[in-house]
Image 1 (cartoon, rainbow, N blue to C red):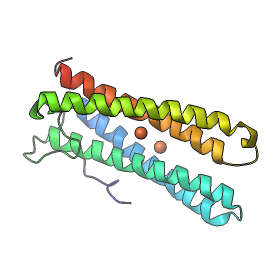
Image 2 (tube, rainbow, N blue to C red):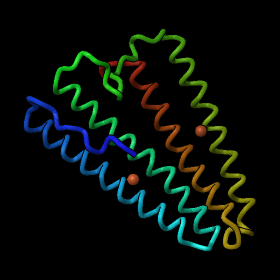
Image 3 (cartoon, rainbow, N blue to C red):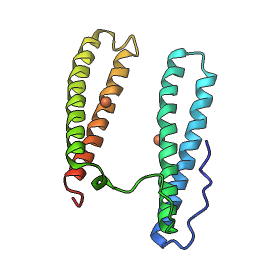
Length: 164
Ligand SMILES: [Fe+2]
Ligand SMILES: [Fe+2]
């Protein structure tokens, strides 16, 4: 993991400097958690515990990357850099409107179908929910599906009305 030691923005406002400090501090916290999880996964003899900790590691790696991208984007914005920030601007208007609307609606329908399917599967696993990790995994996928729906609703809403 790198990127936690990005130089603060030059010529930034107080708000930008404070936000930058929060983002980089948080990226560092994520990095520390990550190292602790990795050590825990190595140290245990339980495959189940190591498996769960590895799921957490995957998420924390993503969090670490997102915080670093946010910090680099803030830096490039406040320094009025000509380069594209890692987190893109909301340029939905560049996409073909009809195609983009059709795409987000279609994906939303699929995620909603997926949510129903996972709910049914979760019920089927009730008998083994205290003897296997399976129910937990389906539970986590249900949460992921909620997240996917939130992402698509955001896109749909902003493609429809870029100002709103
Ligand atoms: Fe995190
Ligand atoms: Fe999904």
